[in-house]
Amino acid sequence: MLDVAFVKPALPRGGALVLPVAENSGLGGLAADLDAAAGGAVKRALAAAEFKGRKGQSCTVWTPLPEGRPGPTRIVAVGLGKAEEVSAEAAEAAGGAALPLVRSEREATVAADGMAPEFAAAFGFGMALRSYRFDRYRTTEKDEDKPKLQGVSIATGSVPDAKAAWAPMRAVADGVFLARDLVSEPPNVLDPETWAGRCLELEKLGVQVEILGPKEMKKLGMGALLGVAQGSENEPRIAVMQWLGASGGNGKKAKAHKPVAFIGKGVTFDTGGISIKPAAGMEDMKFDMAGGAAVIGLVAALAGRKAKVDAVGLVGMVENMPSGTAQRPGDVVKTMSGKTVEVINTDAEGRLVLADVMHYCQDRFQPVAMVDLATLTGAIIVALGNEHAGLFANDDELAARIVAAGKGTGEACWRMPLGDAYDKQIKSDIADMKNVGGRQGGSITAAQFLQRFVGGGKNGGNGKNADGTGKDGSGGKAHLPWAHLDIAGTAWTTKDLATVPKGATGFGVRLLDRMVAAHYEG
Image 1 (tube, rainbow, N blue to C red):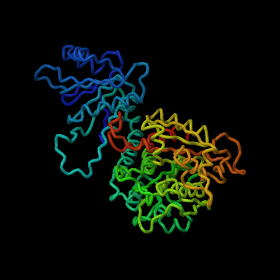
Image 2 (cartoon, rainbow, N blue to C red):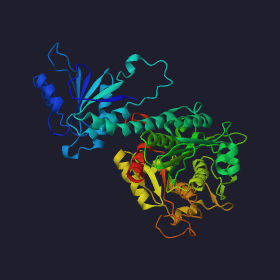
Image 3 (cartoon, rainbow, N blue to C red):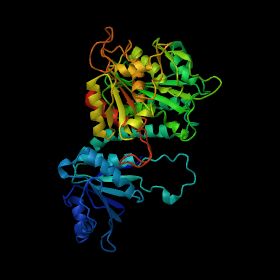
Image 4 (cartoon, rainbow, N blue to C red):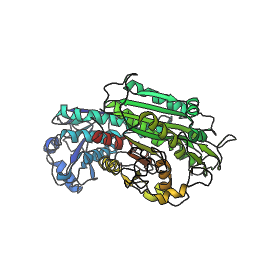
C-alpha cells in the first residue's frame, strides 16, 4: 500500500506537487507560494488549460520554476468541486484521481494546508485506495510500467489531527486491500483450505478465529452446504471470526454479547456444477467468493481500528465442481435448520451455502442484526448494472442505515422488493422449497430463499412478513433485522474508478465499516 505521511507545509525540492483546488477559489497556502516563486506561471498555466477546480477535473503543469532552482518537477491540480460542498468524500475522490497522474514520480507532496485535517486525511485515503495493484504473479513486467511512487507526503496545518483522522482510515484500507487480494487470487491457489489458513492470520489482530471442517458440518447437519461441496476434491471450510471490541476483551475466554453478524458466500470457483456454465467468461468465476472476502476484510478493518463493537463474521468456503460425486438437479438436501430443498439448478449454489451458515450463526450467536453479502445472481446485474448492489431487507431501519453508509462511501446500494408473490415462486412439489424460482425476478426469489432461513417459519420467523411490512407472520419469534446484499455487479470492475483500479473492488468493506461506526459502536 502507498505510504501516507503527514508533514508541515513546505515546498518540496523535487517530485510532484499535488494541488487540491475548490471551484473558482484560486490558489492559497503552498500553491500560492509556488506561484509566487514562479512569477505567476502556475496561475497562467491553469487559466490557459481552463482549469476551474470542478469535481473530476485535473491539470498537469511541468515545473515553471527558474532553471537551477530546486522544486517540484510537475504540478498536478485536481478539482474538489464547489467550495461550499467540499466534503471528505470529495477529497477522497480527488485523491484517487490524483494518484495515476503522479505515480511515475519517486516522491509526491500534497498541498493540503488549505483543507481541514480530516479532509487532508481523506485525500490521502483516496490516493492509498487507488494505489492498489495485484502483481503477485507478474514476472516479465517492464520497469517503466511499474509505479515508482511508494509514498506521499500530505502537507497540512495540523499534523496531529490529520494523523488521528488517518489511523482508522489506514485500518479500513488494509481491510479493503485484503478483500481485493483474496478476490484476485487464482482458484488453483485459493481453495477453501488455503483460504481458511489465511483467515487464521487475523488472530494477530486480536480476532478469535475458528475453522469448521466437513466432519463438524456433517455433525451439525449442514446438508445444503455439503451438497454443494461434494463434487470437488477440495473439502469445504467455514471460518468463524469474532471481534469483541465492545466486550473489552479478545482472549479465548471473552464472549460476545449479541454481536452484529456478517455472513459471506465463499465459492472459491463456480463452474455451475452439473448445471455447468458456458465456457466463455468462466474464468471470472474465481470472484464468486467476493462476499466472503468482504466479510474477512471487514473483520480485519474493525480489528485494525479497534472498533468498540462485538462483531462476528462467518464465511462458507466451497468449490462448486462437476464430477461423478457432484450434486444433481433433482436432488433433495436437508439444511441445518431441518428444512428441505429440492435442487433444481446446481448453479444456484450460493444460497444453499448461505442457508446453512446463516442458520448456524443465529443458532450460536443470536445476533442483534445480520447482513449477508454474496455474488448471488446475474439477475441483479440485469436490474442494476454495475452501479449499485442489490439490497434486500426485512427491516426498514437496517436498510436505511446501509443505504446511508453506501452514499457516504461510494458503495451504493439500491433497495429491492420482497413479497409473498415472489416467495410462491420457490414452492416445491416434493420438498419445503426449491432453490430457484424461474427467470422472472431471479435476484428477488434468491433473496426470498435466504429469508426463509432468518429465524423460523415460512417467511423467516422474524416478526414480519416477507415484504417487511411489520405484520406478524412468525409464530411469536423475535424480529431479527436482516439484510442481503447481492454484489454480483459491484465486486469487480472492468474499468478504473475514482478510488478503485480495474479488478477486484473490495465492495462491502467500507460500506459495512461505516454502518458499524455509525450505529453499532458503543
